[in-house]
Amino acid sequence: MPTTIKDVAKLAEVSPSTVSRVIADNPRISQATKEKVYKAMKELRYKPNAIARSLANSKTMTLGLIVPNSDLNLFMNPFFMRAMRGISIYAQKHGYHIMYTHTSKMEEEMKYLNEYVNSNLVDGIILMTTVKNDECIHYLKKENFPFVVIGRPEHVEATLWVDNDNFQAMYNVVNMLVSKGHHKIGYIGGSMDYNFSRDRYEGYLRALNVRGLPKEEGLIEHEADFSMQFGYNACKRIYTAQHPTAIVTTDDLLGYGALKYINEHGIKHVKVTGFNNIAMNEFQKPALTSVDIHAEELGYQAAKLLIKTLKHEEDSNHFIVDTHIVER
Image (tube, rainbow, N blue to C red):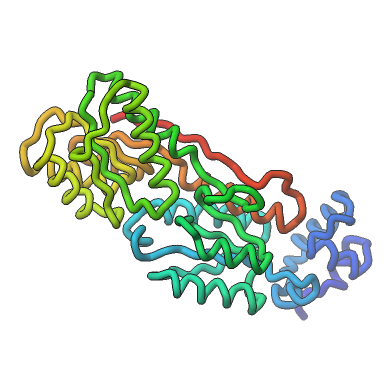
């Protein structure tokens, strides 16, 4: 015979309704009572029925995750894998499951969002990126549906979001390079549709300005994609027009592409930096200096912010994750 709530209640010396409230994480139940019930559940190896649980408390205990699979390339860019790991770690700790989908265009993204919101599949949604005039954010706000964004939204008020200080992070990189004697610094960035791309570009420009260096168009490239090929092509265009002693990029894959061009053409004494600090950086030749944005922590804090809000426990609408430069 399978173990029932009544069996748990009997062992814990509480009523079956109290067990149900503990399973639903009712805040009115004391911690001492919860511990008694959890102990009984563990001893009896009782696992609550997820469907029955969701029907009882009108919650699915599931978070929806929307991941782009076009410009940012889900399976090639390790950022998403690391952020998703952070999301999963926090969600699992607090009894939540993850339902994710990846999309190739905005129309698909809106379609899945509509399904999530109107079919009671999830309690809240995590958006992995934010863009200029973000339709997803506008829609979720209009529907008054709980969500959090990894990335700074255009309008930060009344939106849950988690991000790095991308402006300051890039400013620090350029400032470090100037301090090491580099005065001609190229820039390879991603699409300016993304808010983090714009913030990193502004950090680059501000650092040049503060250190008295001019903005030179021949040194600046904005690419549509975050890939090695685009980094390679951008580096080629920069070296056709200019001869920088350093190049900053806004993603490690762009940095890999720039290094590939530099190595193939025997260009010496050029410092290349990236962003994200992915695991393969130390194996590049030369090894890639990179900004560690702590992608796993971004995911972890996004899940934490959303789940705490769903439980009416959160008193802040955003969280900034620190960055640091990993020199190689």
